[in-house]
Image 1 (tube, rainbow, N blue to C red):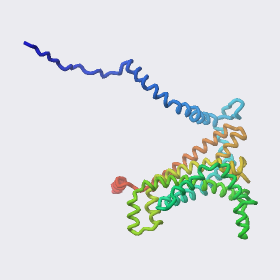
Image 2: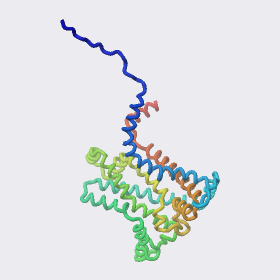
Image 3: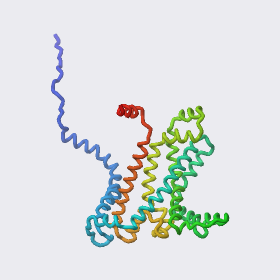
Image 4: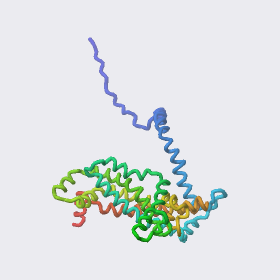
Length: 328
């Protein structure tokens, strides 16, 4: 007579406590190569990114020429910055140049992207041609613009003289300098923003454009009633990045006019003034204070632009229903 051995299921619960020390060590050994693989980025960021940021904050509360001892002066650098007329002149120049360059630049970029999105020939050639100024050497560009806007032998003044008009002191007057720098910014970054807008246009459903054509809408109506509303997130991105870039303008005035900022410091921007104080006057404490003041100004204007553009964005059906329910 054979007996059948039966096994009863074990009623002992699996261990639910913390893993054993061996298991922890094994996990650490398995994760170590992964952490070593990504460690170069964090090391470089800590050395060349995080440390300069923290050190600049510390320097803004000190008086240091880069060689002697660092002396702590508290808020003295910021107190002097508030009363510094040269700093506020640089702030005014920066905002004027930003206004003269950013608004025309973004509008032209939108129009160019809209035209490139149409069914035209040689689209790839036009994309490369419009993007080419963004990768052109700034020194070469400054030489070209210096020749075009020169007071004596400039191409523009030569054309004005041929037409019997008075010449314009582009590089020796306050508004002439600002217009010249703004023209450089527009020429350099219009194609860059146009490529960004073109990428956004390609994500818009073509059914909207087909329906507009069936209804008899012209290009202007399609542009302002379909393209612009659908591109509000892209417009928000370009407005914020252009604002930050415009407030931190340095290369164009420095290469074109030098560290002096031109006649009457008309081309002296905030970053150029900060560069002069830190690396020409060797006042690193005050230069750091200017840098953090610029950071606050850029942050405030980025928030303002974000609020202005985002609040005008079209509401989704859920947001529209919630708004109607709130009114009731």
